[in-house]
Amino acid sequence: HFIILDLFHFVLQIQPIDMIKVRIQVLAGENPGIKYTPLGVGKQILANDGYRAFYRGLDAALMRQLTYTTSRFGIFLNL
Image (cartoon, rainbow, N blue to C red; front, side, top):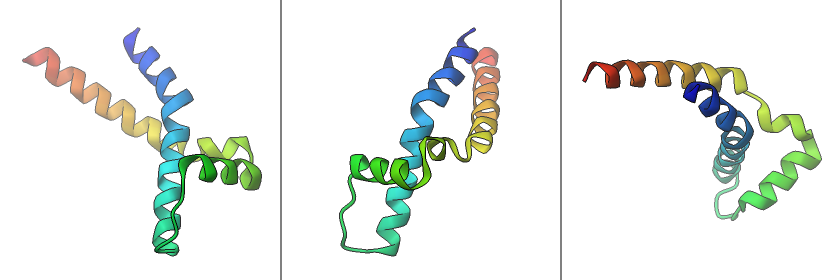
């Protein structure tokens, strides 16, 4: 049950935050010296690409999370 709740939390909250973080990193690399804020970048993503853009790459992120969580539980149970 906890794995399902963890994935639900990840999908709804962490993925959009991670998308904004990555976009800030890319923009800062392309335009050094310019400061980008999470709110400003989030608004830009929403205006240019729409709401679904926050969830691009979700399949890869879920696979990573599933393998990480599964191995973490496996290690924890064997300790």
